[in-house]
Image (cartoon, rainbow, N blue to C red):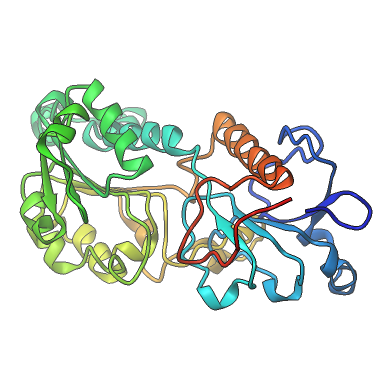
Length: 350
């Protein structure tokens, strides 16, 4: 699977969110030429379209995507993230595989636990009040925060990220409960340190016992708006929402109202409803808000611009995994993490 000049040609469609070492970062043994989408003129890309074997893409926010059908010899779309909700089957050319990439579950799980601690210990409010000499005694500021070993964490979805979140939480003696579409056995749950597994129709029952709630599901028709008014009504008013899945999993209006009116104690939001990564490099304040609601006015929200997974090991891990995928493709071997509902390739052969 090589082009006429003996090299693979890969088109990188990655937003400017992190530096990428195309020459040395992937560990690719095949001869390869990288084309970078953001630095090419449309005419230049059209001239090279028949050469492109691979498209590497990170479909985050409103990052632009090329028309994939313009590449007649495309064999693989390698998604540099777990989510693939921006793709639909009709967008994928015939003969093309689609595979996603993880390697971020460790850094995201660390961020989730950090957020749990920051929120429950009221870190920012305490820091600000202490700096301003306005800090009051603990009984006047909500009393002693809940200890992790006395808390319950509810994780919605038990994929790569959800399982790692449970692992980190259990190391701190947090009680963990899970709701998932295909429940696992009691033995499997016990082996992973999960105290109870609920089916998806038991979500609200699970929420009622949680001090922290973490959605770890993909965005699709079943999960969009999963957390609306009824879900927030089921949660304790002392509970915290931590969203690292996708913004649309939370109903935007209901989430804002729950936080503004203290129906829940607070939230850490790393994913949003109108993400604009390129907007972070502009001076346009409207492109920096990422929501129709003024979450930035609320003092019970920890805000993060889709960076919970961004660490040096995450970046290097993703690059090495994608490099291994490209080597597999070059050798005519099956790819890992194939997304079956999108892929249209036949069995790989050299």
